[in-house]
Image 1 (cartoon, helix red, strand yellow):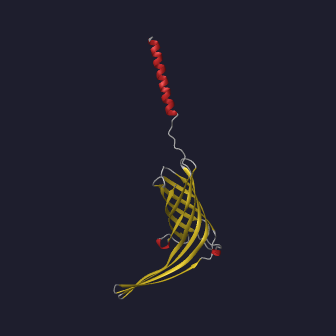
Image 2: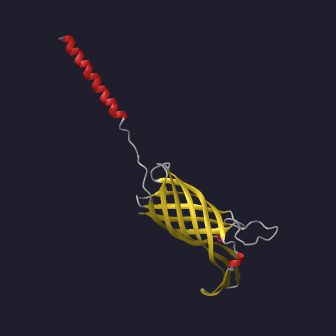
Image 3: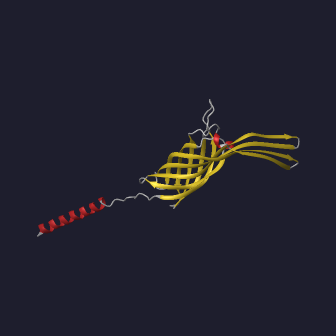
Length: 235
């Protein structure tokens, strides 16, 4: 009888151990791949031309806005095509003087701006080292719509604490025949999902295509450089 009870106890113990082992092995914690999501995004641009040195004096402020679709490829990787209205260009401070003669101070500043509007299609591959943070990289294809060159001169004269300002402005449309309609660039950025729907994104775009339709012989390529900072909302 003792041998019978001992055998039953050993059998029960083995069955309990096997059940526990089976439960642990067959019930792993899995994160399912996220669904495809559509969204919108918008933000500011700070752009300049490749022939210029990076400084605050040549940064042209613009904006970008459009739609996106995020396509998960795995738990950590996703593909995000976008269609954006993208405003690029550059600014140049041609001259800036500050002269004081007796009791009179005269400040003169002249600057030149180029604004170029594109429809851009970035194709970003995103990788998530954490659930909310991601890095991204990929090509950006753009088509030139229109643009404008403008110049502004400001003269401020101060005498006896009283300041008078004179401004002169002029602008002209960019001749589309002089511009390369298609532009190829490379983008590198990072982002953070503040909530499940709302996120913030920063990106740097380096153009590879000369923006001029015909590059003068002996000159360096003229390309766009742009920093972007914006918000996105996924539905």
